[in-house]
Length: 200
Image (tube, rainbow, N blue to C red; front, side, top):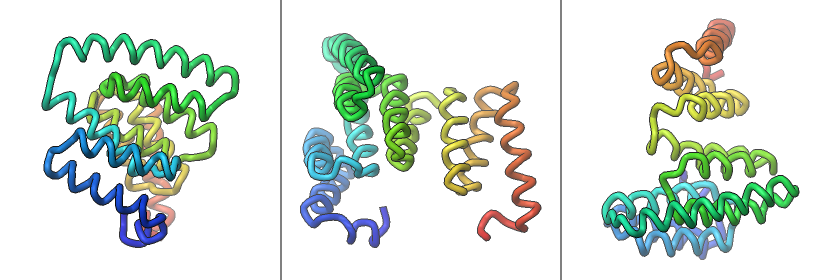
């Protein structure tokens, strides 16, 4: 997040966020989780804090593997995921997000949970939150071409054509037979040809 974005945040939220980033750098992931959770409690639509919360959960799991926690996490994550899906179907999006985030905390490596959270944000018109949480997926599984393609489409919708092209290329690397990604790259190349560059 750039300096202007941080300056627009309430002071307490930006303090939690900055301290959280420092905790991540020091690999103090437990403390980082507390700080990013506190930032999100005060500002629910803070996309970067949500991404770094996930990253801290993921890194904590990777640095301190525990087979018992892994198994119970998968069970608890599945239960919360089912609850979230039920709430989502009932149109209770924010309650569904809360349940999906409980599933994410229990099982941060579950890409289906990350996609479910992103879909909820998209249904609320919060594209940036959806993108930030989806950017976690290739860190877990860089062969998930469907998510890579979804990210490309979202970036394209925001007219960030460079990132859209990069994600379409990544999707094609993961699945060389994906016609949608191939078509997406050709369309973006046509836009670039018409404009001269993506920056205009």
